[in-house]
Image 1 (spheres, one colour):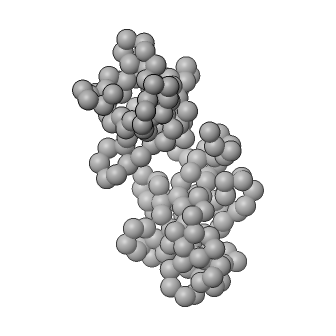
Image 2: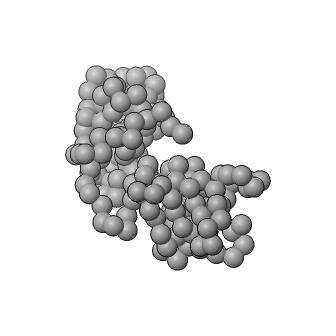
Length: 171
């Protein structure tokens, strides 16, 4: 599990410098990518380090942005890989059938017959639908379960579990 507080949601990441004047490459994980700026200042994984940012323009794969006190290419490069978090209470409420990835990670996954299939380690997206990355006893390798209504009919956050009806061949 992560050391990040449950009160923080990862909304983006820094991918290094953009140009030579201290701008950073910003990758947004928000549904509306440009809204990441609305949550500034953002926090680092420690919940203490603050990143006040302003998007300067859209670029391939994200945005170019300025961060307060980052003025050189070297300073921007040093931030490569930093994940950016926003406090949960600053994010919009979601409809009943939508979830923040952070809320799914760690949930146990059962099949419709009640057999434990594994636990959600991560949520991946390779361009189509989200995939739940499952790990657990009896699994010799990572299993990627499509996060669709057909394959995952029930997500019960209060009980900390997911009921899945995996497509044939997934397990």
